[in-house]
Length: 199
Image (tube, rainbow, N blue to C red; front, side):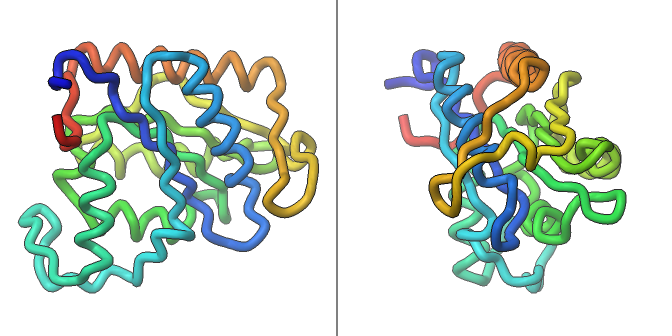
């Protein structure tokens, strides 16, 4: 299979790492929704499982001269992707530290790839976190899509317990999800596939 005839790889990043996080069932829903959309191969990257230490590389990430095995593994994971959807919470009017740490670990692996934001929280639905996050994504050379997927009072749409929790989206959330996926596709038409998957 060549770059020309493979489907783009969309990585859905679960930003929250705390126990009981709402982002996990939301990410599972969006992964399935993206698969049904039909334009992408999809995988979930859970920052709780990645478990990066606080950034401690001696060289700037743009040099890609990583010394830590954890960074090398994370670099290889993110480099595979052609596009991202970040499922993020809102903490104190901004996004969470684990996400910033993950973004700061790398540089070129993020660049020239579209990204959509799926925010959740209370009444603000992660909007203030998204506002804080956007300039960071742009600084890393990513291309944020115009459509976002804000999910207010997300807990109301979660059912079940533990690993069996499921997220049932409202109609407007599904519509936002479709717009975000279409936006990613439109950016990919412009940028091409920049993931490092083997062909």
